[in-house]
Length: 434
Ligand code: NAP
Ligand code: G4F
Image (spheres, rainbow, N blue to C red):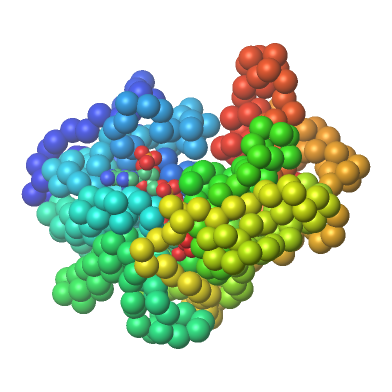
């Protein structure tokens, strides 16, 4: 029953779904595990919700109030009998307390954050409040509700903690050197977990995750920004792509692998901190080159620093990539590459770097068209998609295919409910094209 902890018997209203179900179906009285996910509407949150539902969890997600729709990544889960959403915000202690006292989760995955590094320089105080103090609010709520012995907690820590890296590759023992308000806030959160774990014996684990991407990645992060632009350039609706520091290197994995890692971390007997990474690193420049190859364009570079441009090797005058200093960060993280040995051994995590699956050589022409057709066939209906078992979309090549597919659907088709649904699925559903 709700409300036995110090937070009282407050009731929280679920968001416009499953209203007909009595609240009791969502308490952990029948042996089914109950998870609470903050940031459920984000890339990782949506994949994690799907993953946990498949494992027969009851899943509660926290949704931020917004005057525009922010639920596109989880709308396909609305009808699921074990999924429910609640309004909430990491800046609101009482709200967190109410949610925990009502739901009494066995596992909390704290994925909610202001997650954009560049934006954190513009909104530093807010970032500190949500990404740093917000975590402490949740930890205190666990204690206030008397759940510290029963509730396991996962914190979305980040490779950004390594910032100006002190060691290559980075592992759990590598000292931190945060380079943005985002990373500083996440460091506060990281150590808050360690401190409460030692002080109160709570089951609190940090996943230090290196960059992970997918077609659900927010469009302002560099991989989606590039794949969307390449597709738009290919279909003639955009002429150039503007980027910041293209020599930054990242260890890019797939979000679906990483949400499984989050779950595995919480299944450990003893709480601990783990790096999840692929152990491979690539520059943004390489990503750009590979992405353009997918539409048959070989990019060549000329010029230096802000004057550098990427142009089509088939036409020197066709400049496709420009540097815009507005995308530079005041302090940059130049190189990230993780050492996932501890996770591989401890939780048997097997993250794959998917970057190099992109085809080498000329990627356009007939082959591209036939792949598109294949893609279209696969995606015609959501049912077909699920039946086919396509469960991953690989970056960067398949992200581009998804974007290209969207561009091939005619305006009339877009109006039909079926096409609208397919489009939504492409953007939201996990898909793998082989
Ligand atoms: P994301 O797509 O940006 O999702 C962030 C989520 O947090 C969204 O659901 C967002 O809600 C929610 N949120 C934002 N402010 C909030 C607040 N004040 N209260 C409650 N929820 C709030 O991020 P992601 O890529 O899935 O990453 C998930 C977590 O992992 C984040 O904490 C991120 O910092 C961390 N992380 C990500 C990576 C990566 O490469 N993706 C690597 C390491 C760590 P709206 O939908 O309403 O905006
Ligand atoms: O895609 P990004 O914005 O991701 P970043 O900064 O690495 O942060 C992401 O990964 C972190 C894990 O390491 C997470 F903690 C964090 O929440 C987020 O998910 O930028 C990647 C790199 C950077 O070096 C950036 O300077 O790409 C460079 N970049 C170059 N031009 C650009 C651009 N990044 C963005 N977003 N936009 C550009 O135009």
